Image (cartoon, rainbow, N blue to C red):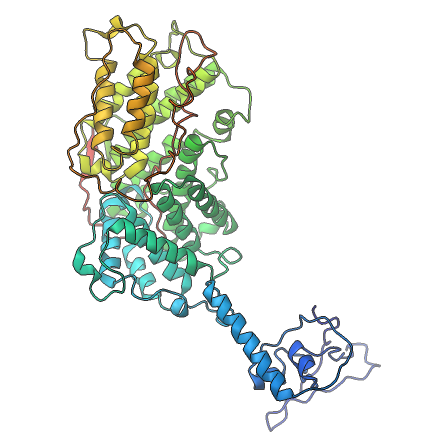
Length: 594
């Protein structure tokens, strides 16, 4: 319970000796207000049965001299017998000490308003070599698809890890996210001097993720969010997405978008900052969240929170990064049409879909990317794959509304359209190196999986003789299978599902032989060897276990709805924050022909 009456205004003349004397003003003065004294003692003074010497301030002098917290939480009780004041002080001190220790065990330090991680963090988890390796990995592999960090500011943030809890959590979450990436490898010597034994990067990534989450509880980032808060939440999302923990991933993505809105990142007026680098990185971060949320909404059937309410980044904001920014802007344009209207229809929360609207959307997607892409190779992989995956999503919405026809003049509105999409996707994939595809991790594999499953359903109902003597759907499906099996993270998690899908769907198709599992180019899939994946259910229900024929309501087709087994991609790798990189182009610039 708080004090019922607070002291009124007083004049505080300062004497030559430096002491303040409180002087009441005459009651007759109309320009002054009489002071009122504190009517109640603080908890500690009340417990000790001493006069509370607060003089209208907190903490009172008694608590200050005794080293006690000055609070007003106790409910006033009747006076009781006096006891040993010294014993009471000791008891109060011990109770408050125990409370502080308990709070620190839960990651909260009430005595430290600056929220230093010094007393909260676990020592011996990270070496500077490891941090440097993770930062280098980000700029070498993820930066082109997520141009939101600045290398100099990353260094400044690392320098604040010992004194700022948000800086510590941001760096640790960045390292956790990089450690969880399929191709991240830590050299054994990096563990020298640490208290953790040598282990795989994935195992250490798990540990760092738990550390960042625990320590973050020591700061009220929700009430007072910063750009670091948004970035850290996004790193958590990316980490849990890779670990196939979709509910937790969705929670942190939603957390990131909510914090962004609390900070006003959806309002253009809040980007007029003196620090141009800070302003540009915030703008890129907002659009990164925008794209990621829309991709996740399509694959996990979630609602949207962010909209296109601010300006896009401009190519001239950093002449050294024109190529990277060009690819990033193309990605935003790809996902921009998938607004509340589409997502509402997709989630069956809206009505009013029309054939004309869907046809226009397919045309927008076809025209969204130029024949030649001026971007990095990893960006080209993301753009070409996302384009074909989105065309598949629109086609699935079309068939769910009964708008497709075998006699449609527009091929995008026909039942055979997924064959065209698969052909374009396979042709694009042949231009890319495996390394440039593996940068995107599970997100890319899931898009390939969605397209392959849709193609499988189409093949099961299209007469075999239509494509017997030419390069056709069977070849596209085999190549998609081969891609999924050879990309790290796909062979154990997605290939068995696809093989089961093909077996159940195509088993009775005349003239079609179920292909054998393509040989792996690796003896071991390090990423899939994670204990976190063993025994886990798939993030999408197996399209085969239900036994129901897909699209049973449409006798012309039997295409299983992606809503049963779609999975959320991360269209861009991970957000970073306010850091810019003196990106040296470790990824070669890339021009992709359509």
